Image 1 (spheres, helix red, strand yellow):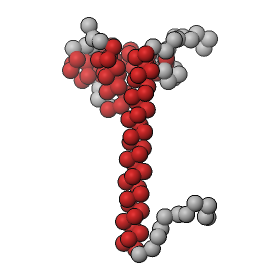
Image 2: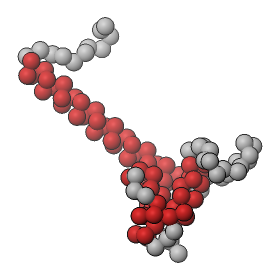
Image 3: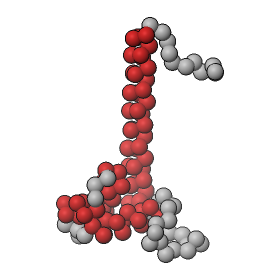
Image 4: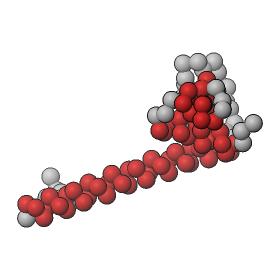
Length: 112
């Protein structure tokens, strides 16, 4: 039996790394379809997305569990870190281009 933390880690890996459910299932000794089920449940409960196998009505609401909240927080933190890294890379690229061309190429706030 897997702990909630282990389930969260597996779902997170499935949703963020692109690794197949079958591959993750083999690593953790569970069926790949279980990982897909967990991921679909997460998408429905936390992200409000309908999946193709969703049978819930629009009026039916599901309480958010702590596991799903932790998973969503973790996903958002990773997404934020990636965005911050992208901004840093772009800023450094602009700095190097400015130095190379001897001109400030960064757009000033409020200019056209």
